[in-house]
Image 1 (cartoon, rainbow, N blue to C red):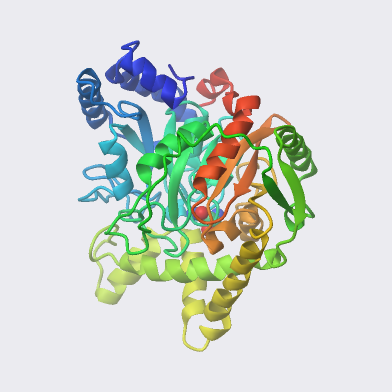
Image 2 (image 1 turned 45 degrees about the vertical axis):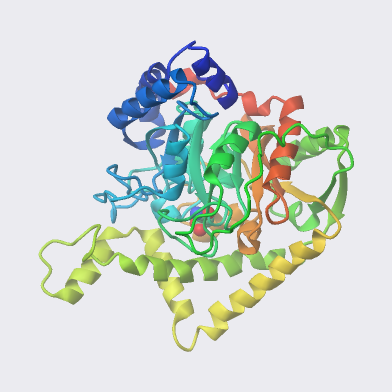
Length: 489
Ligand code: GLN
């Protein structure tokens, strides 16, 4: 029941091997056994899940089901869910119950998916290890002493441990791909504008994008199909038809030209990760892919540019949390100033404050041109690097993260070391490009991810390529040891 792909689960539901209600009940039992050690799910929604499961069963019985009907799902707690707490991993929104559903939530519910609850995440999606969550860190199911990656670490750990077969994530600088890599699952950040951001709590609006997290590329294709598409409520949503990602799978890779950026395979990459990736590249060669070395000369600018742009946008987005409208409010303020400063001072954690301060500085009069404007100019150069490369190659392949999962606490005191975990993922956000991470093997017993980056709106090709690889390898089918998790509390 918990080892099936989404299509296999859908077939079993249709064949009445088990019902969605049974699957939902069993999933909650599994969550009760494994989640205490993982801390991947923070807000369960058992009652509404069982109601949705019964509705799905009725729909299946009526012959009115689509591919995802009756299949359990977790939402990253950044997506607003009507009637169910949306905390964004923060104390600030610990008491927040949204009056509406995010578009992504609505679309997956309309497809008949059953939301089991909300997944833990870094506070306001700022982090690469899930250690900034107000609800405590998530543990990596492959080794409970290690981080799952972040900020969608709860989603990644939950899928890897089989609590759910699918979860939503968001990616501003790598938060779908990096935890997917560290937990051994498949995650896709779509093209900016492909999936609606409406109802998704904003971190850095020009970079944020929602996407699917699942075991395989085929599963991710089914999920993206339901998530993607124009939404008039999101002004940056793009009005372009959504291709049939799932039926697009299965095309041969012969003749595909893939670029390997030399800047992504040099200093800073763990040699054990590099060795695993060499093996994956060999496998792709056997499938007929041609690899060429390419250069993305502005790669050294990616992290510094991101850490101006993202904090600048977050300082503006997070100004709405003032203790007045919703969210955390400090006790007995003496005046309005005191209400603002203490509500924000007590409601936000250290990393979020660091971002708000640097962002406010970068946007302030006198520094705007030197920092924010300059960062935007450099962002253009980074984008141009990709445009030039895509005149010659179809896709780019690279490591997703420079190392495997690191130890809890290892980088917590060193923000720059933490920021460097996203060194290979951030450029795709700055350029708005789609990028996917898929399992590519193991180094010292820990999963390694390979990243594929494509031209705008080429999600279908990314999924097809990863799917072809997953037809000849079984890394995506490996499971972390369950008893170690259950005993790990
Ligand atoms: N780790 C990066 C950051 O902290 C990216 C986070 C994300 O993609 N949401 O900003």
